[in-house]
Structure formats: structure tokens, C-alpha cells
Length: 509
Image (cartoon, rainbow, N blue to C red):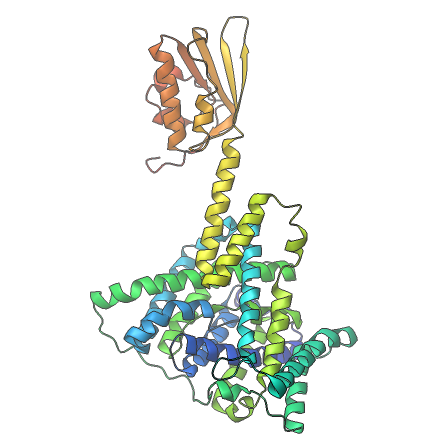
């Protein structure tokens, strides 16, 4: 029993009042986003709400990051919209189930460790881009049904209510933290609108959220190879986008709370949640940075807040739709604008003059791709690729060769820095083969042979020396390098005590 409690993190201290109130606040904030994302995906609003319930509940109980909130997300909506419009919701549900299986496999294979390859500028760009998206999405509330900007009294009303919401969220924590400021702001604005009979946009103006318990059913599609070939690419993208967004959100929450979540466990939970979401008529989703930050800023740190949010959302759908549909959108808009302001890494702007230009370029690129393409996975991948190329270029310039001739007339080349595909050209330029003495020693004690390009460079340099009748020795190479060199028996001095034991990055080894 003790191990079970430790596995679910149920032994941590829980502030029940904070967790419950924060969960209710998050549930209110989930409603308009879940509805909006479902509409974007060309699905019924209830598919977004059902996904938010299933995703939120499963990941809160089984996930690797207590306090993190999952639900229907825009990243997933953008991926499935083409499938939804062309083939209908049943294919979407099947795709989400398959995506869940892929995510669970990623967790079981412990692929979450690869998130450590994401550089900090990429995380900054991801967060800043997401903050801009959250802010820009709120501007739709300042437009009428035809898409034109509001003017006159309707504009002044919603603008005033939004500013009041933001003022309460900003100012109340300075007076007391007994009750989440965001919940107080929503209830206060709701009371003002109802009490004074103010005519303004409400949740019900978006769509009705009235429904029952999520119905279980197996997706009604042909189970054959043709269907699999159709939905697999979408499922793979959903799985990748979901894992990237979820694990990056986990890392961000880790930094804020100064604790450590478990990425592989979160990947399995995300997969299980998507799998069940597909079977319970949900559109699928992933971790939600905005709602997670609302939860964390309210002081929630345990699993209870996420569970309360999911259950409260289901109660809203089944029993409280009439009340929730009367909530003014201005209150939720003000809340999400404050989330956007809090999400943006303002500190990243102050470091522009201190950060390397390459890091600034990576951060800005990731932000722009996120904002304009709304493709979080692509943004992160582009950032990682650019950062990796910059790293390779910088390391390619670091290879050095200290040259000396001993009393016996033997020339020594002491190599410093990694020898890999990027540094091969500079490595070859270090040697003066025609003017070197008859015997040469190339020492790799302070270097490392990294890949097959480096091995090929060693083969070529030794062949060039042998062609002009000169003897060359390679010292301090690993056994793996020795096996891959063509003339190893002629050119390598084996030193069992000093030679390193590392593997070259090559499949045949």
C-alpha cells in the first residue's frame, strides 16, 4: 500500500481548500477553450469538453507532474481539422486512440529523456510564442458575430469588465491569498453582470455545453490496412505534438515549483488519456500551459486540483450548463490575458544583449514559427535543429593541434577538441605531410573520435603519410576506433593502461 501511495504521489501534503478552489477556477477556464478548440477542429463542442474531462482526470491521477492540467488543445485541433472535415468524427476518435497507443509506447520505451536535448532558448521561444497565441486568441471576444471589431457601448462594457477582472487578479494577492484571485475575479464580474443586468457576451453565446456522461463506443470505421494508412500519419503527429507540448509544460512547471516531475510516467499517462478520450467521444489533447499556470499560481501543488477540475467540468456539462452558459466571456478573457502576461518570459527580453546571437536567433525563430504556424512541434524541432547546427559549427572550430619535434626527430601532433564530421576539414589542414619527418605521432589523449566521418578522416590521413613512405602512429584511440581503421595494425600504438574505452557513434559497433 505504501508503494502504491508513493507511485501516485498521494503521500504529499495537500492544502484541500487551495486545491479545491483552484480546481474549480481551472474548470471554469477550461470550458471556453475546450469549446473553441472543438469548433476549430470541425467537431461538436461536447467532443472538446469530453476530451478535457477524460484528459484532465487520467493525467491528474496517473501523470508524472502533480498540479499540471491537461485537456483539449489547439495544437491537436489544428492537426485533426482536415481529417475531421474530410472523414468525420469517427475517424478522429480512432486517430486519437492510435495516438494514445504511440504515446504510451514512447513512455514505456523511456523516450522522455530526449527532452533534455531541448535547449533553453527553444523553451523560451516556445513559452513566448504560446503566450502570444493565448493573447491573440482572446482578441476574438472584442469582435461581433460578423468578425468586425466592436464599437461604442458594447466595446466599453467588455473592455471595462476585462480590465476589472485583470485588476482583481493582479491586486487581490497583495491583500490576501486565502482565496484564488482568479476565482474571485470570475465570480465578482459574474455578480456585476447578473446584478445590473448588463448585456454582454456569455459562454452560451459560443455554444451550448449541455450534455450527459461521455458515451463509450468503439469508433465506427473499417478496420483494415487502408484505414490504418490513412489515420497513422495524423496519429503520429498528434502523439508527437502532444508529447512535446506536455513534456515542455512539465519542465516549465518543474522550474516554477523547484521540483522534478517524471517525463516517462507523464508520457504513459498522456497516452492512456488519449486512448480513453477516443473511446469516450473526445477529440484528444495534451497538457495545457495556460491552465497549468493558473493552477500553479493559485498555489495548487497536488493531484487533487486536477481531479477537482475534471470532475467539476463534467458536473457543469451534466447539471450546471444553464448557469455556466451565463458566465460573461469578459471574465474568462481577462483571466486568460493575465495568463498570457504571466506566461511570457519577460526576462528573456532583458538578456538580449547578454545572450549569444545564435541563442537569440533560435528563440525568436521558435517564437515566430509558434505564433504564425501554430505548430508547436515544428517550432521546437526547428529550434533544436538550428541549435544543433550552431553547436556543431562552434565545436568544429575548436579542434587544435599542438606540434613539437622531440630529440629523436619524431614530430608529435597533440590533438585537442572533438573530431567529427564538422571538424574534419580543419583537422586535415593541421598536417604538413610533405615536410614532416619520417616518423610522426598523432596523439588523441585530449581529443575524441566521434563518428564515421572522423574515422574516414583518420584513414585518409594515414594513407597520405604511407604513400610518401613515412611512418605514422596514432595514440590514445579507443578499441572501437582501432577496429574501424583500415591499417590499424601498422599505425596504432596500443596502450592498454591509457587508451580510452568509449564507443564511436556507428551502427556496426
